[in-house]
Amino acid sequence: MLQWIALLAGAYTFVPGALRQLVRGRLGVGLLMTIAAVGAVVLGHVGEAAALAFLFSLAEALEDRAMGRAQEKLRALLALIPDTVRVARGTRTVTVTAAEVRGSDVLVVGAGERVATDGVVVEGSSSIDTSAVTGESIPVAVEPGAEVPAGAVNGAATLRIAATADGVDNSLTQIVSLVEQAHARKGERARLADTIARPLVPTVLIASALVALIGSMLGDPATWIERALVVLVAASPCALAIAVPVTVISAIGSASKFGVVIKSGEAFEQFGTIRTVALDKTGTLTRNEPRVVDVRTADGWDDDEVIALAAALETDSTHPLAAAITTAAAARPGHVISARNVVEDAGHGISGRVGQTAVRVGNTRWLDPGRLEVEAGSMAENGMTAVVVEAEDQIVGVIGIRDELRAETAETIRKLHSQGIDTVMLTGDNERTARALADQAGITDVRAEQLPRDKANAVESLTVQGPTVMVGDGINDAPALATATVGIAMGAKGSAAAIESADIAFTGHDLRLIPGALAHARRGRRIMTANIVLALAIIVVLFPLALFGVLGLAGVVLVHEVAEIVVILNGVRASRRPIETTVKVT
Image (cartoon, rainbow, N blue to C red):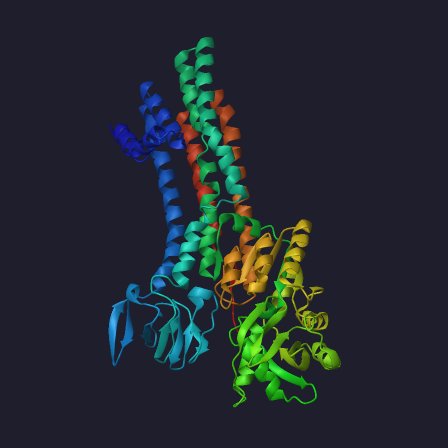
């Protein structure tokens, strides 16, 4: 009676599903187990059938639990969004649900409260903790004008934040959506496991039928039918079917917790093979806080006039250097002017009309500095980017802009080199400026004066030599990000084009995430490989033991399901956060 109870309880968890799959024309592992259990009962081995049903249902439950835990860790990000939020409406403050927040609302966020959606501080000064979103453990000071991501925790002072995204469609919900979809795009090892497992089920059915048929012709039918059922179980690809998915979902979900959003299982697997890292300079290796430090002018022009002309064109530009020019112009009252017919030429510069004057602003490759060539060269030698300003086909000035390296750049490059990974700088800047900054960072391979198509070509040539990752944040980097084996967009300040073209996005901007994320991917790839090898080894070993009667049904089931549990537990290990991904911002 107990055996029958165990059999029915276990079978209830997988037999109905297996029959539904069969009706739809799909053959799965559950069908193999159903046939084996029914056959054992027909032969009078209720105990073996109960053991099979119980152990298989236990393994299935553990598999569901492992997958569920991986998904729970990801969905836990959504818990960072508060259930309710205070919103300023006229002269009063009302409480609404986070889902009701719209992009035009002004949020009132008190001390210790979480921010419900992305926004910009409009009133108050405080510090915010973004560790749960970006992986950066040190609170960041914010004041009016500072961007604040959804899920950040406010510090000691009340802030008023103008929402820039709806409560149900912000950076945090987008991260969760991306990662939940990631495992649908399968990587090389996932496809390998599927390629093996898919035809294996009908093959196992045919092999078992042949064992029963031929064996019955040569010996005792009861004995050989029983062995056929044991072979059916021994060759079933239970562990193989779960070997990769549980690892991929665990690893991708874990990565999202320290600020690395991986868009697909394929990208995760390829990331673990990387041998070269190509990095854009401006906004990636540098702080993305360029400022004007020098201005040289032609005769008849002064600094304020040159800055004002350049700023008129750069006002609506998304290029990092544009902000430096407009900021410098804002500090010079009386010289604020506007432009029209503005056209931006990616990789070169920008042109338009200021009043009746045709103006162009660009790099030294596009605009020859002419009589100011010596001054432009001196700026480059000192690590500055020289921006040439032309009015009515005459060079009127050169603006020197410097963007300092990030504090963690040199440390990141050292860590990558210690992992045996080569580094390359790709930049649209001139050779001398690029070399000056590359020497500080520790990068020896520098590709300067690169247009967007040149960056893409450079990355393509690097991928021929070995798997290459491209790291960038601007619209100029989009072609190279799409060309690389894996593209990484620095998401904190990255352009939409860069993030869309990339396979991986960082919610923060600390470069030390790169070596940590690489270590995480390599470890996950090793775990997937080990799981596939173990799953195949179990089938290879058990098949002859079952065929020659060394192991009975209960023994084969036990070994098989223990192996599946080992594969599941090994896959879950991929969710552990490696030491290298811990980022401490100073």
